[in-house]
Image (cartoon, rainbow, N blue to C red):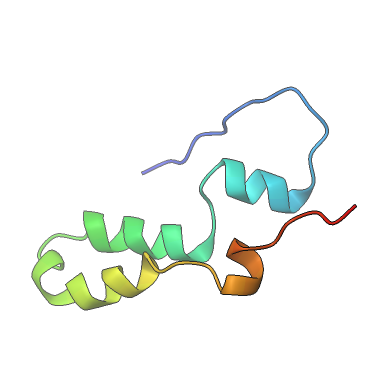
Length: 65
């Protein structure tokens, strides 16, 4: 599979590009597990771990300014 680039004309950081294009390591692991023949049955627990939520300090962060 070839990942495409979601072009949004704006100034972005490398982190923004990873998020916008779903290229984080968890997403890439899930892509491999979903596409490798015969792995779905054996890798369901690993895939569930990859779908986890962010730490509270990240998920609940807000701008105080």
